[in-house]
Image (cartoon, rainbow, N blue to C red; front, side):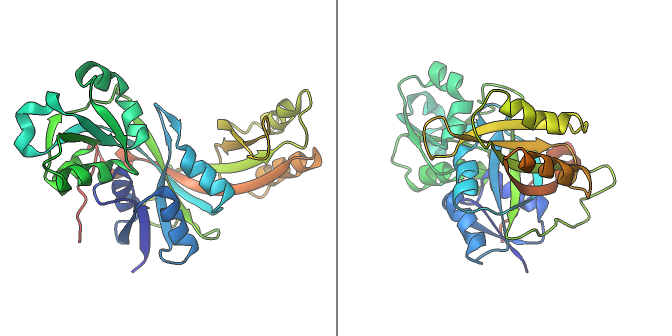
Length: 299
């Protein structure tokens, strides 16, 4: 049986994403995003699922930076999931949730619930964890601590916690993009792919020098070929202030003509170009129907 690593512990949004993309695989939780990616490089699992981008807070920088600078792998598939955050507490404190002294969660989840925390728990201390599920696990393991976790309903069930307040994220259209990563260009092949499945090709582009119009020339290489760009993001190269590379997502599958010709043109301009992956993209709804978060069974 193939193994897939995910940002754990059990009950995380990432586990739900992994269970949806690879329902027959054995799921192994890891403490952090770097640990999850390292597990693939070290051969402990064949692939990994990690969060890459949130509609409210933008890119998950630790994922992108670790991927680029430490564990370059292949982007093999994507799933975009709706995210609903809840305030979870020990059932014995169900009536006293407003007296919570500490709220645990992942930094992105905390940021997604900023307004709720300001209005309802203004005096609570915020404590960051590696994942929302690890926050729920901490609250379960420390019932004497007057604490709460921001996490999902899967974590509530997994750790026997009470949902004191539901859907506390500040915006309704809160969605997260998860990526399946593999070692080497292993294509994602299963019954989920149909003729209607959309693809992306992700590329990392570095400019040869910072001159007027450099980025325009890069974008023009896509524009005149009528290649739609879904996303372009700059990230520091970590080699000096003002030095950046660009992550570009093209709305097409890697082919034998357009993508190679873009790559060749950019390299002729002196740019560094790396294909990070060409992969199918799924929405939560098309794979799970109307059910927002699927039931995750733990073996």
